[in-house]
Image (cartoon, rainbow, N blue to C red; front, side, top):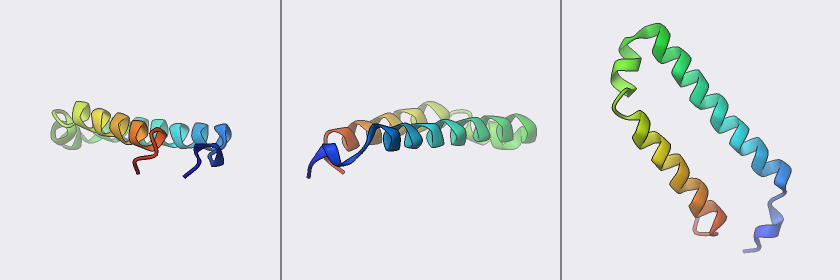
Length: 62
């Protein structure tokens, strides 16, 4: 596969959507408390998973 098929604009949109999802999770977690308690220990793991998925995408491993 050719990585050049993915435009920079598309990649920026993907990153923007991930940031929006992250912010929504933070807001919902702050409002509900219970969700924040459940996701609290998982937030670093979710961040690592997102980074790994982006790196795998950039290395054409997905």
